[in-house]
Image 1: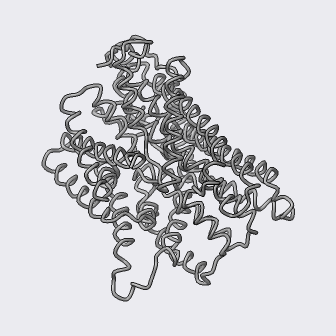
Image 2: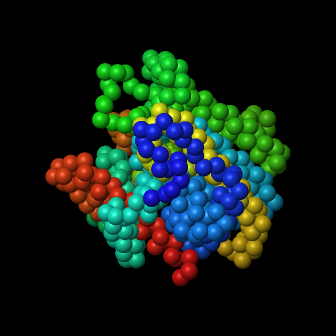
Length: 564
Protein backbone atom coordinates (compact mmCIF):
# COMPACT_ATOMS: atom_id res chain seq x y z
CA UNK A 1 0.00 0.00 0.00
CA UNK A 2 1.00 3.62 -0.52
CA UNK A 3 2.45 5.52 2.42
CA UNK A 4 0.94 8.81 1.33
CA UNK A 5 -1.06 10.23 4.21
CA UNK A 6 -4.06 11.11 2.06
CA UNK A 7 -4.20 7.65 0.59
CA UNK A 8 -3.81 5.81 3.88
CA UNK A 9 -6.27 7.89 5.87
CA UNK A 10 -9.07 5.70 7.10
CA UNK A 11 -12.47 6.33 5.54
CA UNK A 12 -13.83 7.39 8.92
CA UNK A 13 -10.88 9.67 9.76
CA UNK A 14 -11.54 13.38 10.23
CA UNK A 15 -8.03 14.32 9.11
CA UNK A 16 -8.28 16.76 6.17
CA UNK A 17 -7.90 15.10 2.78
CA UNK A 18 -5.41 16.65 0.38
CA UNK A 19 -5.19 15.57 -3.22
CA UNK A 20 -1.79 15.69 -4.99
CA UNK A 21 -1.34 18.79 -7.16
CA UNK A 22 -0.87 18.49 -10.92
CA UNK A 23 1.60 21.39 -10.93
CA UNK A 24 3.80 20.10 -8.10
CA UNK A 25 7.34 20.22 -9.59
CA UNK A 26 8.13 16.48 -9.71
CA UNK A 27 4.62 15.58 -10.83
CA UNK A 28 4.71 18.25 -13.55
CA UNK A 29 8.04 17.02 -14.93
CA UNK A 30 6.86 13.41 -15.06
CA UNK A 31 3.52 14.29 -16.66
CA UNK A 32 5.22 16.43 -19.33
CA UNK A 33 7.63 13.62 -20.20
CA UNK A 34 4.81 11.07 -20.31
CA UNK A 35 2.74 13.46 -22.43
CA UNK A 36 5.56 13.72 -24.99
CA UNK A 37 5.67 9.91 -25.12
CA UNK A 38 1.89 9.67 -25.42
CA UNK A 39 1.69 12.27 -28.18
CA UNK A 40 4.38 10.50 -30.19
CA UNK A 41 2.62 7.14 -29.81
CA UNK A 42 -0.67 8.69 -30.93
CA UNK A 43 0.87 10.38 -33.98
CA UNK A 44 2.73 7.23 -34.98
CA UNK A 45 -0.26 4.93 -34.66
CA UNK A 46 -2.81 7.16 -36.39
CA UNK A 47 -0.53 7.80 -39.38
CA UNK A 48 0.74 4.23 -39.83
CA UNK A 49 -2.15 2.04 -38.67
CA UNK A 50 -5.07 4.46 -38.67
CA UNK A 51 -5.79 3.83 -34.98
CA UNK A 52 -4.90 5.35 -31.64
CA UNK A 53 -4.31 3.25 -28.54
CA UNK A 54 -5.48 3.95 -25.01
CA UNK A 55 -2.18 4.71 -23.22
CA UNK A 56 -3.73 5.25 -19.78
CA UNK A 57 -2.48 1.90 -18.57
CA UNK A 58 1.04 2.64 -19.85
CA UNK A 59 1.12 5.88 -17.88
CA UNK A 60 -0.12 4.11 -14.77
CA UNK A 61 2.49 1.35 -15.10
CA UNK A 62 5.31 3.88 -15.59
CA UNK A 63 4.15 5.79 -12.52
CA UNK A 64 4.05 2.54 -10.50
CA UNK A 65 7.64 1.78 -11.48
CA UNK A 66 8.76 5.32 -10.59
CA UNK A 67 7.09 4.94 -7.21
CA UNK A 68 9.51 2.13 -6.43
CA UNK A 69 12.50 4.42 -7.06
CA UNK A 70 13.82 5.81 -3.79
CA UNK A 71 15.67 8.84 -5.16
CA UNK A 72 14.68 12.37 -6.26
CA UNK A 73 11.46 12.07 -4.30
CA UNK A 74 9.96 9.73 -6.89
CA UNK A 75 8.65 7.49 -4.10
CA UNK A 76 5.73 9.95 -4.06
CA UNK A 77 4.40 8.12 -7.11
CA UNK A 78 3.48 5.20 -4.86
CA UNK A 79 0.37 7.29 -4.25
CA UNK A 80 -2.40 5.99 -6.52
CA UNK A 81 -3.72 9.53 -7.03
CA UNK A 82 -0.40 10.70 -8.49
CA UNK A 83 -0.45 7.63 -10.72
CA UNK A 84 -3.93 8.73 -11.77
CA UNK A 85 -2.60 12.18 -12.73
CA UNK A 86 0.14 10.53 -14.79
CA UNK A 87 -2.26 8.28 -16.68
CA UNK A 88 -4.60 11.22 -17.25
CA UNK A 89 -1.85 13.30 -18.86
CA UNK A 90 -0.46 10.62 -21.17
CA UNK A 91 -3.93 9.55 -22.30
CA UNK A 92 -4.96 13.14 -23.01
CA UNK A 93 -1.78 13.72 -25.03
CA UNK A 94 -2.31 10.55 -27.07
CA UNK A 95 -5.91 11.18 -28.10
CA UNK A 96 -5.40 14.93 -28.29
CA UNK A 97 -2.50 14.66 -30.74
CA UNK A 98 -3.88 11.84 -32.89
CA UNK A 99 -7.66 12.26 -32.95
CA UNK A 100 -8.37 15.86 -32.01
CA UNK A 101 -5.49 17.68 -33.74
CA UNK A 102 -3.66 15.77 -36.49
CA UNK A 103 -6.71 14.08 -38.01
CA UNK A 104 -8.65 17.35 -38.56
CA UNK A 105 -5.73 19.28 -40.08
CA UNK A 106 -4.80 16.37 -42.36
CA UNK A 107 -8.16 16.85 -44.11
CA UNK A 108 -6.92 20.17 -45.50
CA UNK A 109 -3.70 18.59 -46.77
CA UNK A 110 -5.52 15.63 -48.34
CA UNK A 111 -7.93 18.04 -50.01
CA UNK A 112 -5.04 19.90 -51.60
CA UNK A 113 -5.35 23.03 -49.49
CA UNK A 114 -2.23 23.21 -47.28
CA UNK A 115 -3.07 26.88 -46.66
CA UNK A 116 -5.90 25.65 -44.44
CA UNK A 117 -3.58 23.70 -42.11
CA UNK A 118 -2.94 26.47 -39.58
CA UNK A 119 -6.56 27.72 -39.47
CA UNK A 120 -7.71 24.12 -39.03
CA UNK A 121 -5.17 23.60 -36.25
CA UNK A 122 -6.43 26.69 -34.45
CA UNK A 123 -10.02 25.48 -34.82
CA UNK A 124 -9.10 22.01 -33.65
CA UNK A 125 -7.27 23.41 -30.63
CA UNK A 126 -10.33 25.49 -29.76
CA UNK A 127 -12.61 22.47 -30.13
CA UNK A 128 -10.26 20.43 -27.95
CA UNK A 129 -10.31 23.08 -25.25
CA UNK A 130 -14.11 23.41 -25.26
CA UNK A 131 -14.44 19.62 -25.24
CA UNK A 132 -12.42 19.23 -22.06
CA UNK A 133 -14.14 22.17 -20.37
CA UNK A 134 -17.67 20.87 -21.02
CA UNK A 135 -16.80 17.36 -19.82
CA UNK A 136 -15.16 18.73 -16.67
CA UNK A 137 -18.22 20.87 -15.87
CA UNK A 138 -20.81 18.14 -16.56
CA UNK A 139 -19.12 14.91 -15.40
CA UNK A 140 -20.98 13.49 -12.42
CA UNK A 141 -24.38 14.87 -13.47
CA UNK A 142 -27.50 12.83 -14.21
CA UNK A 143 -26.70 13.12 -17.92
CA UNK A 144 -23.04 12.04 -17.67
CA UNK A 145 -22.92 10.23 -14.32
CA UNK A 146 -19.74 8.99 -12.71
CA UNK A 147 -21.69 5.81 -11.93
CA UNK A 148 -22.01 4.99 -15.65
CA UNK A 149 -19.70 2.43 -17.24
CA UNK A 150 -16.88 4.48 -18.85
CA UNK A 151 -15.14 1.06 -19.31
CA UNK A 152 -11.54 2.16 -20.11
CA UNK A 153 -11.67 4.30 -16.98
CA UNK A 154 -12.54 1.26 -14.91
CA UNK A 155 -9.70 -0.63 -16.58
CA UNK A 156 -7.18 2.09 -15.70
CA UNK A 157 -8.42 2.37 -12.12
CA UNK A 158 -8.42 -1.37 -11.52
CA UNK A 159 -4.90 -1.64 -12.95
CA UNK A 160 -3.70 1.00 -10.49
CA UNK A 161 -5.57 -0.59 -7.58
CA UNK A 162 -4.32 -4.07 -8.38
CA UNK A 163 -0.75 -2.81 -8.60
CA UNK A 164 -1.19 -1.07 -5.25
CA UNK A 165 -2.99 -3.87 -3.40
CA UNK A 166 -1.70 -7.03 -5.13
CA UNK A 167 -3.23 -10.33 -4.05
CA UNK A 168 -6.39 -11.81 -5.53
CA UNK A 169 -7.44 -8.63 -7.38
CA UNK A 170 -4.12 -8.50 -9.19
CA UNK A 171 -4.42 -12.15 -10.22
CA UNK A 172 -7.90 -11.67 -11.69
CA UNK A 173 -6.81 -8.53 -13.54
CA UNK A 174 -3.68 -10.22 -14.93
CA UNK A 175 -5.74 -13.24 -16.03
CA UNK A 176 -8.09 -10.92 -17.91
CA UNK A 177 -5.12 -9.06 -19.38
CA UNK A 178 -3.60 -12.28 -20.71
CA UNK A 179 -6.89 -13.34 -22.30
CA UNK A 180 -7.35 -9.85 -23.81
CA UNK A 181 -3.83 -9.89 -25.27
CA UNK A 182 -4.33 -13.38 -26.72
CA UNK A 183 -7.63 -12.37 -28.31
CA UNK A 184 -5.93 -9.31 -29.81
CA UNK A 185 -3.11 -11.51 -31.13
CA UNK A 186 -5.71 -13.54 -33.06
CA UNK A 187 -7.33 -10.41 -34.45
CA UNK A 188 -10.27 -10.41 -32.04
CA UNK A 189 -11.40 -7.52 -29.85
CA UNK A 190 -10.85 -8.28 -26.18
CA UNK A 191 -12.19 -4.80 -25.46
CA UNK A 192 -15.60 -5.78 -26.88
CA UNK A 193 -15.90 -8.61 -24.35
CA UNK A 194 -14.46 -6.42 -21.61
CA UNK A 195 -16.98 -3.62 -21.99
CA UNK A 196 -19.81 -6.17 -22.08
CA UNK A 197 -18.74 -7.32 -18.61
CA UNK A 198 -18.80 -3.74 -17.32
CA UNK A 199 -21.35 -1.60 -19.16
CA UNK A 200 -25.14 -1.40 -19.20
CA UNK A 201 -26.52 -4.76 -20.31
CA UNK A 202 -29.27 -3.35 -22.54
CA UNK A 203 -26.96 -0.82 -24.19
CA UNK A 204 -24.31 -3.48 -24.86
CA UNK A 205 -26.91 -5.95 -26.14
CA UNK A 206 -27.93 -3.43 -28.80
CA UNK A 207 -24.26 -2.76 -29.49
CA UNK A 208 -23.76 -6.49 -30.11
CA UNK A 209 -26.79 -6.63 -32.39
CA UNK A 210 -25.36 -3.75 -34.43
CA UNK A 211 -21.98 -5.48 -34.71
CA UNK A 212 -23.68 -8.70 -35.82
CA UNK A 213 -25.81 -7.02 -38.48
CA UNK A 214 -22.78 -5.14 -39.78
CA UNK A 215 -20.75 -8.33 -40.08
CA UNK A 216 -23.34 -10.77 -41.43
CA UNK A 217 -25.82 -8.68 -43.44
CA UNK A 218 -23.67 -8.93 -46.62
CA UNK A 219 -23.80 -12.74 -46.35
CA UNK A 220 -27.60 -12.94 -46.31
CA UNK A 221 -29.02 -14.12 -49.66
CA UNK A 222 -30.49 -11.21 -51.55
CA UNK A 223 -28.56 -8.62 -49.51
CA UNK A 224 -25.05 -9.41 -50.72
CA UNK A 225 -25.11 -6.47 -53.09
CA UNK A 226 -26.09 -4.02 -50.35
CA UNK A 227 -23.55 -2.05 -48.32
CA UNK A 228 -24.94 -0.62 -45.10
CA UNK A 229 -22.53 2.31 -45.21
CA UNK A 230 -23.05 3.04 -48.91
CA UNK A 231 -26.80 3.13 -48.29
CA UNK A 232 -26.29 5.41 -45.23
CA UNK A 233 -28.37 3.08 -43.06
CA UNK A 234 -26.17 3.31 -39.92
CA UNK A 235 -25.81 7.05 -40.44
CA UNK A 236 -29.56 7.53 -40.62
CA UNK A 237 -30.07 5.50 -37.44
CA UNK A 238 -27.39 7.52 -35.65
CA UNK A 239 -29.02 10.78 -36.73
CA UNK A 240 -32.42 9.66 -35.43
CA UNK A 241 -30.98 8.29 -32.19
CA UNK A 242 -28.79 11.36 -31.74
CA UNK A 243 -31.70 13.75 -32.11
CA UNK A 244 -33.72 11.85 -29.50
CA UNK A 245 -30.66 11.67 -27.21
CA UNK A 246 -30.42 15.45 -27.33
CA UNK A 247 -34.14 15.79 -26.62
CA UNK A 248 -33.71 13.49 -23.63
CA UNK A 249 -30.86 15.69 -22.42
CA UNK A 250 -33.04 18.78 -22.78
CA UNK A 251 -35.83 17.09 -20.82
CA UNK A 252 -33.38 16.37 -18.02
CA UNK A 253 -32.35 20.03 -17.99
CA UNK A 254 -35.87 21.47 -18.17
CA UNK A 255 -37.55 19.22 -15.63
CA UNK A 256 -38.21 22.08 -13.26
CA UNK A 257 -39.38 19.98 -10.33
CA UNK A 258 -36.25 17.89 -10.25
CA UNK A 259 -34.08 20.92 -10.90
CA UNK A 260 -35.58 22.84 -8.00
CA UNK A 261 -35.25 19.82 -5.73
CA UNK A 262 -31.63 19.34 -6.76
CA UNK A 263 -30.85 23.02 -6.21
CA UNK A 264 -32.48 22.94 -2.78
CA UNK A 265 -30.47 19.90 -1.76
CA UNK A 266 -27.26 21.42 -3.08
CA UNK A 267 -27.92 24.62 -1.15
CA UNK A 268 -28.76 22.71 2.02
CA UNK A 269 -25.72 20.45 1.84
CA UNK A 270 -23.49 23.15 0.27
CA UNK A 271 -20.32 21.21 -0.42
CA UNK A 272 -22.01 17.86 -0.01
CA UNK A 273 -23.29 15.45 -2.64
CA UNK A 274 -26.64 15.71 -4.39
CA UNK A 275 -28.79 13.01 -2.82
CA UNK A 276 -32.28 11.67 -3.59
CA UNK A 277 -35.25 12.15 -1.28
CA UNK A 278 -34.87 10.43 2.07
CA UNK A 279 -37.55 7.90 1.09
CA UNK A 280 -35.40 6.86 -1.87
CA UNK A 281 -32.07 6.57 -0.02
CA UNK A 282 -30.56 3.12 -0.06
CA UNK A 283 -28.40 2.93 3.04
CA UNK A 284 -26.35 0.12 1.50
CA UNK A 285 -25.03 2.44 -1.21
CA UNK A 286 -22.14 4.69 -0.24
CA UNK A 287 -22.51 8.45 -0.78
CA UNK A 288 -20.05 8.40 -3.69
CA UNK A 289 -22.76 6.79 -5.81
CA UNK A 290 -24.86 9.95 -5.90
CA UNK A 291 -24.48 12.83 -8.34
CA UNK A 292 -21.91 15.57 -7.76
CA UNK A 293 -23.28 17.98 -10.37
CA UNK A 294 -26.85 19.18 -10.04
CA UNK A 295 -29.21 20.18 -12.85
CA UNK A 296 -28.21 23.85 -12.75
CA UNK A 297 -24.52 23.01 -13.05
CA UNK A 298 -25.27 20.64 -15.93
CA UNK A 299 -27.23 23.36 -17.71
CA UNK A 300 -24.48 25.93 -17.23
CA UNK A 301 -21.83 23.46 -18.41
CA UNK A 302 -23.65 22.55 -21.61
CA UNK A 303 -24.79 26.12 -22.23
CA UNK A 304 -21.29 27.52 -21.89
CA UNK A 305 -20.11 24.84 -24.33
CA UNK A 306 -22.59 25.96 -26.99
CA UNK A 307 -21.55 29.61 -26.56
CA UNK A 308 -17.85 28.77 -26.78
CA UNK A 309 -18.42 26.62 -29.87
CA UNK A 310 -20.21 29.56 -31.48
CA UNK A 311 -17.38 31.97 -30.67
CA UNK A 312 -14.76 29.52 -31.92
CA UNK A 313 -16.74 28.95 -35.13
CA UNK A 314 -16.84 32.69 -35.80
CA UNK A 315 -13.09 32.98 -35.23
CA UNK A 316 -12.48 29.96 -37.47
CA UNK A 317 -14.55 31.48 -40.25
CA UNK A 318 -12.41 34.61 -40.06
CA UNK A 319 -8.96 32.98 -40.01
CA UNK A 320 -9.81 30.33 -42.63
CA UNK A 321 -10.91 32.90 -45.19
CA UNK A 322 -14.28 31.30 -45.93
CA UNK A 323 -15.91 34.66 -45.24
CA UNK A 324 -15.02 35.55 -48.81
CA UNK A 325 -16.82 32.49 -50.14
CA UNK A 326 -20.15 33.04 -48.39
CA UNK A 327 -22.80 35.71 -48.28
CA UNK A 328 -23.69 37.22 -44.91
CA UNK A 329 -26.79 35.01 -44.40
CA UNK A 330 -24.84 31.94 -45.54
CA UNK A 331 -21.97 32.84 -43.21
CA UNK A 332 -24.33 33.19 -40.24
CA UNK A 333 -25.88 29.85 -41.15
CA UNK A 334 -22.45 28.25 -41.42
CA UNK A 335 -21.38 29.53 -37.99
CA UNK A 336 -24.56 28.27 -36.33
CA UNK A 337 -24.42 24.93 -38.14
CA UNK A 338 -20.72 24.45 -37.28
CA UNK A 339 -21.33 25.20 -33.60
CA UNK A 340 -24.36 22.94 -33.35
CA UNK A 341 -22.63 20.16 -35.30
CA UNK A 342 -19.56 20.34 -33.04
CA UNK A 343 -21.73 20.27 -29.91
CA UNK A 344 -23.95 17.42 -31.13
CA UNK A 345 -20.89 15.48 -32.30
CA UNK A 346 -19.36 15.87 -28.85
CA UNK A 347 -22.49 14.65 -27.06
CA UNK A 348 -23.14 11.64 -29.31
CA UNK A 349 -19.53 10.49 -29.19
CA UNK A 350 -19.45 11.03 -25.42
CA UNK A 351 -22.62 9.01 -24.81
CA UNK A 352 -21.38 6.12 -26.92
CA UNK A 353 -18.04 6.17 -25.12
CA UNK A 354 -19.70 6.33 -21.72
CA UNK A 355 -21.65 3.14 -22.30
CA UNK A 356 -19.40 1.10 -24.58
CA UNK A 357 -15.87 2.41 -24.21
CA UNK A 358 -15.76 2.93 -28.01
CA UNK A 359 -16.37 6.31 -29.57
CA UNK A 360 -17.57 6.41 -33.22
CA UNK A 361 -15.98 9.79 -33.95
CA UNK A 362 -15.27 8.97 -37.62
CA UNK A 363 -18.81 7.81 -38.28
CA UNK A 364 -20.50 10.74 -36.57
CA UNK A 365 -18.23 13.24 -38.37
CA UNK A 366 -19.19 11.54 -41.63
CA UNK A 367 -22.84 12.11 -40.76
CA UNK A 368 -22.32 15.88 -40.60
CA UNK A 369 -20.24 15.76 -43.76
CA UNK A 370 -23.18 14.12 -45.54
CA UNK A 371 -25.59 16.69 -44.11
CA UNK A 372 -23.28 19.45 -45.36
CA UNK A 373 -23.32 17.90 -48.83
CA UNK A 374 -27.12 17.59 -48.72
CA UNK A 375 -27.64 21.25 -47.88
CA UNK A 376 -25.14 22.27 -50.56
CA UNK A 377 -22.20 23.73 -48.63
CA UNK A 378 -19.30 24.78 -50.90
CA UNK A 379 -16.22 22.57 -50.74
CA UNK A 380 -13.85 24.77 -48.72
CA UNK A 381 -16.40 25.76 -46.02
CA UNK A 382 -17.29 22.06 -45.82
CA UNK A 383 -13.63 21.10 -45.33
CA UNK A 384 -13.37 23.60 -42.48
CA UNK A 385 -16.67 22.39 -40.98
CA UNK A 386 -15.62 18.73 -41.05
CA UNK A 387 -12.22 19.53 -39.55
CA UNK A 388 -13.90 21.47 -36.73
CA UNK A 389 -16.35 18.65 -35.99
CA UNK A 390 -13.66 15.97 -36.12
CA UNK A 391 -11.75 17.78 -33.35
CA UNK A 392 -14.62 17.40 -30.88
CA UNK A 393 -15.64 14.20 -29.15
CA UNK A 394 -12.44 12.15 -28.69
CA UNK A 395 -11.03 14.35 -25.91
CA UNK A 396 -14.51 14.55 -24.36
CA UNK A 397 -14.72 10.75 -24.23
CA UNK A 398 -11.13 10.21 -23.11
CA UNK A 399 -11.37 12.71 -20.29
CA UNK A 400 -14.54 10.96 -19.15
CA UNK A 401 -12.54 7.74 -18.87
CA UNK A 402 -9.83 9.49 -16.86
CA UNK A 403 -12.28 11.15 -14.45
CA UNK A 404 -14.02 7.82 -13.98
CA UNK A 405 -10.68 6.25 -13.02
CA UNK A 406 -10.02 9.02 -10.52
CA UNK A 407 -13.54 8.77 -9.10
CA UNK A 408 -13.02 5.06 -8.43
CA UNK A 409 -9.63 5.60 -6.78
CA UNK A 410 -10.92 8.40 -4.55
CA UNK A 411 -13.96 6.45 -3.38
CA UNK A 412 -11.86 4.83 -0.63
CA UNK A 413 -12.56 8.07 1.26
CA UNK A 414 -16.28 8.21 0.46
CA UNK A 415 -17.27 7.98 4.14
CA UNK A 416 -14.97 10.80 5.13
CA UNK A 417 -16.88 14.02 5.99
CA UNK A 418 -14.65 15.94 3.59
CA UNK A 419 -15.06 13.50 0.70
CA UNK A 420 -17.12 15.76 -1.59
CA UNK A 421 -14.57 18.57 -1.43
CA UNK A 422 -11.77 16.03 -1.92
CA UNK A 423 -13.49 14.48 -4.95
CA UNK A 424 -14.00 17.83 -6.65
CA UNK A 425 -10.42 18.88 -5.84
CA UNK A 426 -9.09 15.66 -7.36
CA UNK A 427 -11.24 16.14 -10.42
CA UNK A 428 -9.85 19.65 -10.88
CA UNK A 429 -6.27 18.39 -10.61
CA UNK A 430 -7.05 15.78 -13.27
CA UNK A 431 -8.40 18.54 -15.48
CA UNK A 432 -5.11 20.39 -15.07
CA UNK A 433 -3.19 17.22 -15.97
CA UNK A 434 -5.36 16.87 -19.08
CA UNK A 435 -4.56 20.45 -20.08
CA UNK A 436 -0.84 19.68 -19.69
CA UNK A 437 -1.27 16.70 -22.01
CA UNK A 438 -3.25 18.76 -24.54
CA UNK A 439 -0.68 21.57 -24.60
CA UNK A 440 2.14 19.09 -25.17
CA UNK A 441 0.09 17.46 -27.95
CA UNK A 442 -0.55 20.84 -29.61
CA UNK A 443 3.15 21.74 -29.55
CA UNK A 444 4.18 18.39 -31.01
CA UNK A 445 1.57 18.49 -33.78
CA UNK A 446 2.57 22.07 -34.65
CA UNK A 447 6.21 20.99 -34.91
CA UNK A 448 5.79 17.63 -36.64
CA UNK A 449 2.77 17.78 -38.95
CA UNK A 450 4.76 18.82 -42.01
CA UNK A 451 7.26 15.97 -41.69
CA UNK A 452 4.39 13.46 -41.52
CA UNK A 453 2.37 14.93 -44.37
CA UNK A 454 5.32 15.40 -46.73
CA UNK A 455 6.17 11.73 -46.16
CA UNK A 456 2.58 10.94 -47.22
CA UNK A 457 1.72 9.75 -43.70
CA UNK A 458 -1.89 10.82 -43.29
CA UNK A 459 -4.60 9.38 -41.04
CA UNK A 460 -6.73 7.20 -43.35
CA UNK A 461 -9.98 8.75 -42.12
CA UNK A 462 -8.74 12.21 -43.15
CA UNK A 463 -8.24 10.94 -46.69
CA UNK A 464 -11.76 9.47 -46.63
CA UNK A 465 -13.24 12.80 -45.57
CA UNK A 466 -11.33 14.69 -48.28
CA UNK A 467 -12.28 12.19 -50.99
CA UNK A 468 -15.94 12.26 -49.96
CA UNK A 469 -16.01 16.06 -50.15
CA UNK A 470 -14.32 16.02 -53.56
CA UNK A 471 -16.67 13.37 -54.94
CA UNK A 472 -19.80 14.95 -53.56
CA UNK A 473 -23.02 13.09 -52.79
CA UNK A 474 -23.29 10.66 -55.69
CA UNK A 475 -26.04 8.48 -54.21
CA UNK A 476 -29.38 10.09 -55.20
CA UNK A 477 -31.23 8.05 -52.56
CA UNK A 478 -28.95 9.16 -49.71
CA UNK A 479 -31.28 11.81 -48.28
CA UNK A 480 -34.27 9.48 -48.45
CA UNK A 481 -32.35 6.68 -46.73
CA UNK A 482 -31.13 9.01 -44.00
CA UNK A 483 -34.70 10.08 -43.24
CA UNK A 484 -36.15 6.57 -43.41
CA UNK A 485 -33.57 4.95 -41.12
CA UNK A 486 -33.62 7.87 -38.71
CA UNK A 487 -37.12 6.73 -37.69
CA UNK A 488 -36.19 3.32 -36.18
CA UNK A 489 -33.07 4.87 -34.64
CA UNK A 490 -35.21 7.50 -32.93
CA UNK A 491 -37.82 4.95 -31.77
CA UNK A 492 -35.26 2.57 -30.26
CA UNK A 493 -33.51 5.45 -28.49
CA UNK A 494 -36.83 6.69 -27.10
CA UNK A 495 -37.85 3.23 -25.90
CA UNK A 496 -34.52 2.63 -24.17
CA UNK A 497 -34.47 5.99 -22.42
CA UNK A 498 -31.55 8.29 -21.61
CA UNK A 499 -29.80 5.82 -19.29
CA UNK A 500 -29.59 2.93 -21.75
CA UNK A 501 -28.85 4.85 -24.97
CA UNK A 502 -30.00 1.83 -26.98
CA UNK A 503 -30.46 3.68 -30.28
CA UNK A 504 -27.03 5.33 -30.11
CA UNK A 505 -25.41 1.99 -29.22
CA UNK A 506 -27.17 0.08 -32.02
CA UNK A 507 -26.00 2.67 -34.55
CA UNK A 508 -22.50 2.55 -33.06
CA UNK A 509 -22.39 -1.21 -33.63
CA UNK A 510 -23.60 -0.79 -37.20
CA UNK A 511 -20.78 1.65 -37.86
CA UNK A 512 -17.95 -0.53 -36.47
CA UNK A 513 -16.30 -3.42 -38.31
CA UNK A 514 -14.76 -5.78 -35.74
CA UNK A 515 -14.62 -9.46 -36.79
CA UNK A 516 -16.67 -11.72 -34.50
CA UNK A 517 -16.85 -9.01 -31.84
CA UNK A 518 -20.61 -9.52 -31.63
CA UNK A 519 -20.14 -13.08 -30.35
CA UNK A 520 -17.64 -11.91 -27.76
CA UNK A 521 -20.19 -9.35 -26.58
CA UNK A 522 -23.03 -11.90 -26.45
CA UNK A 523 -20.87 -14.49 -24.66
CA UNK A 524 -19.76 -11.92 -22.08
CA UNK A 525 -23.34 -10.76 -21.48
CA UNK A 526 -24.51 -14.37 -21.04
CA UNK A 527 -21.67 -15.09 -18.61
CA UNK A 528 -22.59 -11.97 -16.72
CA UNK A 529 -26.23 -13.01 -16.33
CA UNK A 530 -25.25 -16.52 -15.20
CA UNK A 531 -22.63 -15.36 -12.71
CA UNK A 532 -24.97 -12.73 -11.28
CA UNK A 533 -27.63 -15.40 -10.74
CA UNK A 534 -25.23 -17.92 -9.17
CA UNK A 535 -22.80 -15.77 -7.17
CA UNK A 536 -24.58 -12.46 -6.77
CA UNK A 537 -22.80 -9.10 -6.38
CA UNK A 538 -19.43 -10.68 -5.50
CA UNK A 539 -19.36 -12.57 -8.78
CA UNK A 540 -20.34 -9.39 -10.63
CA UNK A 541 -17.40 -7.57 -9.01
CA UNK A 542 -14.99 -10.29 -10.19
CA UNK A 543 -16.40 -10.09 -13.71
CA UNK A 544 -15.93 -6.31 -13.74
CA UNK A 545 -12.31 -6.76 -12.73
CA UNK A 546 -11.77 -9.48 -15.35
CA UNK A 547 -13.41 -7.22 -17.95
CA UNK A 548 -11.02 -4.41 -16.98
CA UNK A 549 -8.17 -6.87 -17.55
CA UNK A 550 -9.52 -7.75 -21.01
CA UNK A 551 -9.57 -4.08 -21.99
CA UNK A 552 -6.10 -3.52 -20.55
CA UNK A 553 -4.62 -6.54 -22.33
CA UNK A 554 -6.21 -5.53 -25.61
CA UNK A 555 -4.86 -1.96 -25.26
CA UNK A 556 -1.34 -3.12 -24.44
CA UNK A 557 -1.37 -5.60 -27.34
CA UNK A 558 -2.56 -2.85 -29.72
CA UNK A 559 0.18 -0.58 -28.46
CA UNK A 560 2.69 -3.35 -29.17
CA UNK A 561 2.03 -2.80 -32.88
CA UNK A 562 4.14 0.37 -32.67
CA UNK A 563 7.34 -1.69 -32.49
CA UNK A 564 6.36 -4.40 -34.97
